[in-house]
Length: 204
Image 1 (cartoon, rainbow, N blue to C red):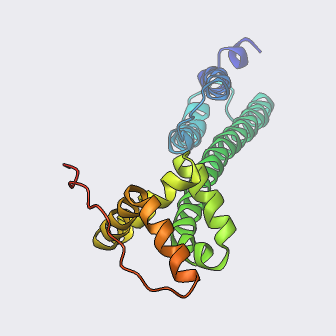
Image 2: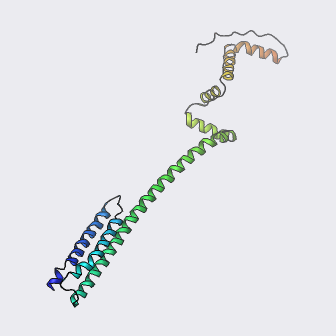
Image 3: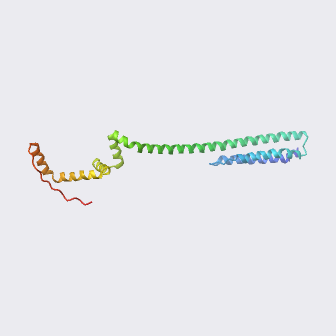
């Protein structure tokens, strides 16, 4: 029995079993696990290669103790394989979780971009179809009173026409009294010529 306890194959199996168990615990604690499957498979292969030559050199070969040693080595090997499978499962689940979060992030980004593109594309049709909605959108975007927003919109749409409107407004405001008299005379069926004052153009 002392020879069985000192069997180098059994000692090697036990040492490797402890190393693999420690490796499994380390992998569970890391946030971004590395795929150790090739390394662990290599360990199993080396154990397979070690098994027969090591036992054939043991003094317990071809005895009942040899059969017991074979059984023990098979049990150890089975345990190692189970631990390797568990490690592969841990690594696989971690990889799946990481891919899931990446997919969620990409989907969110894509949704935001599509939403922004739809807002830009539909802004014009919405403004033409629903003027009140367009006004609310302009109010929210510019934060100004209605008159100032209207001036900005007209000047941006057609600067030349807006200049004509602005000039006419100045003429009406400057000659309000004279134009009022002309309007009253015209309402009584009297045609008359109205004199107006043209103010000096304002410098820009």
